[in-house]
Length: 193
Image (tube, rainbow, N blue to C red; front, side, top):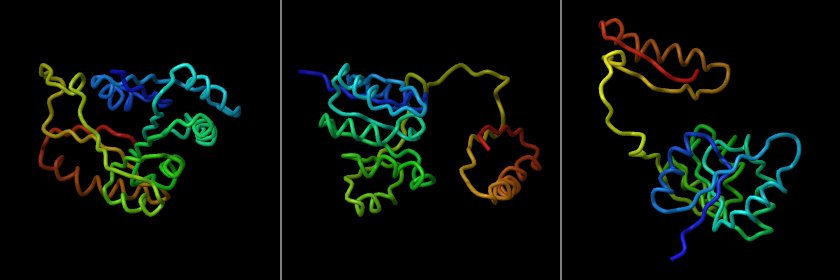
């Protein structure tokens, strides 16, 4: 039986160590190609990658519009008759700014937000839900290291946009984190913004 071949142009570790690694563990070939970025259209590079790897489909996960020119990608895919699957990992926060750059031109969309399935379907896009999972090669028990033992660890990103982002972060910190600190707990925080 011939192995299924996918191709992706998103080389961010969140995806290469996550879903791409998972697909490979299931026997799916998934070459990851990093395209050059800049003012030149990527049509030639995309076409060469497709011709060289002959994928059954092209898979674009998440935040990729800064890596892959959607216009170039979809013009090549249409010309070559290759289907496209998009995984909208930035939903719901960046539905308009990110997901709608790829989703309307995709043959299938997976969203991480069940509440958005209806919106995609209204746009005529076949859609399902695909949540993040764990890669057992990465997410596994490891020996305890005393220097990393805390009472509470918060790992979070502030996805609030606009001028009120800092006041929301401040209010959230006061409501969620400061009671833990005032209670004398050893708290560590990691995240963007």
